[in-house]
Image (cartoon, rainbow over all chains, first blue to last red; front, side, top):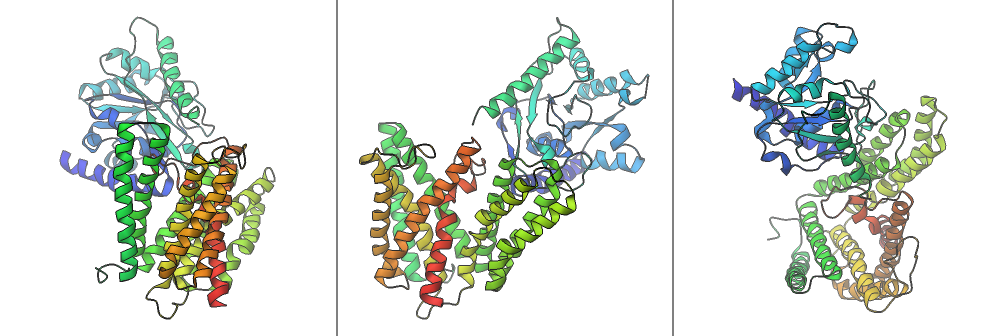
Length: 220
Length: 314
């Protein structure tokens, strides 16, 4: 069953999505080698502007990780119906959690517990801490859940990640996919600091991601 | 060998000689770079590497089937247009217009394949003018509309209209006495315009220090440009037995390719300076974008095409 799921994800991400992103859309994958040596990690992409982000990050990972890496997604969006939830689990391998800021009070810790459970099972996660997509491309306010998960399992490294201008490919609220060069850059592994507060950790992660963004623009 | 690939025996001989020179140059420059590493030696190694890329693409793209060649040129136009559009940074409101601009590329190459000369010539200059404007009007967003009209249309002209003439070479009727005359033309065009770069570099390095355009491309010197023309002329003379043209015509064609090549190169450099970027993209790792590689071809293809057209087909 696991092999079957791996095969489906392999066809989805590596055979269909990877060449499509590379040749037609023009996605550039940086720092591919860096992840290979790691066993478990949490990818934190600081700016979420498009569904192309998730696809590009997943297609960028080595094939052996496919079943083990789960993009964390909103249950109210990807799991709104049972069929939708099943399909996104099968083809995207998502971990569905409730977004508490959208009114589902009291569920705040359930989502965090789900992520911790997934990490305990040896899974890796892809998280967009902004919680939703924005078309501006700026790095906005983070939700604290990500840091609270990492503080519980502080031996697991996080990888700060920057995705540039993917809103031009597939912005929020427009189904048209357009070719446009964009890049995914995954930084080196970092750990959260247990001795400082959640907010300080969050700004730490944010500045790591901003560092990647600045190094990209200064390359020209 | 010529049963397996689309090249005539003469053409294969030229390719074999070219491959031999390339292997020698690669070994020589690699040793030079190992023994005395410098910016110059690194540049030479990179240039030989990009020649390998050109050679492999030429062999695969031209040697299998003429439809494969057309698809290859179409893909090159597509990537080049995408690079320009990505760097020009249009707002999200013009996405539909950009999408329409991409649709011109397959249509233009289909017309080249079908040898519909009038439609081929009219599609982008006239059709683009009308349709890009119409789509922008339907969008109902007046902000930046001049920028969208102008830049999208210009990008299509620069990347698709010009390079599609390479595909049209394939559809031109074969000249009697040759097997595939389009191959000689395309080989000549690519070989001369790429060698022109080397001649410019070498002559500029040895003799010149007076800049051709110090704000646009500080690497180009006047002596280098003249050396490029003289070098291409000489190369054209030696390549003339391959071409279905007279010796004088071949030499004139080489001079035209060289001069237009310099300006095509500077044209893309100007755009990059204006946008303050170093490369158009990172599509060919280590060699920048596709448009950085075909910069001189954008101008010399059209010039060479009409030269041939008026000499032979008119």
